[in-house]
Length: 186
Image (cartoon, rainbow, N blue to C red; front, side, top):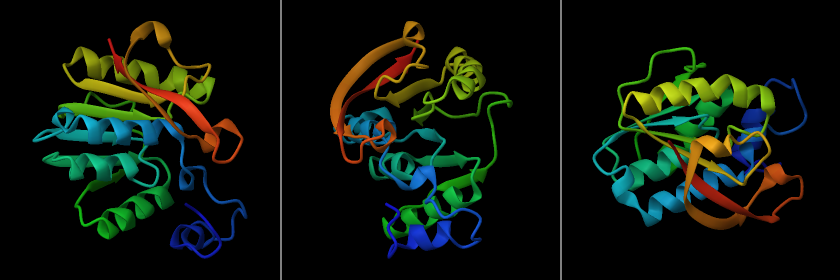
């Protein structure tokens, strides 16, 4: 988490462009619920190639590696998030690959599992990313989404596979638990 004494806070403030810590430096429910799910169901990623889309601080990518993934690519559009994910992976003694950029316009990656936490918090983002996730699912990639049930979530295209109560910074009230779920894109 980004606090005034944390490395994440110092990283976020390095360019003095914004005095607020970045969105990815807080515990959002979607990533947290995916992490819980992977710890409970490591077979989901064991010996598989995985993409963590919108990795933020790298939590889900790190958990995937700790659960036995053979390779994890952590992707984000924020350069500082990529640095934070790399630092967090080092601190957790795992190796992840990282990529800076938006891959949603690309062909589906050559992976087995795509993990996406908290990507449906904004209507425009949801409309942008859903076609990519659908292409990935059609290509045979297991697409798992973590979300506390925000309005832009495309519920009609998802199958709920697990429920957890986890803290959600994105809900607007710090440390408030949110009933969150892991969904499989169908």
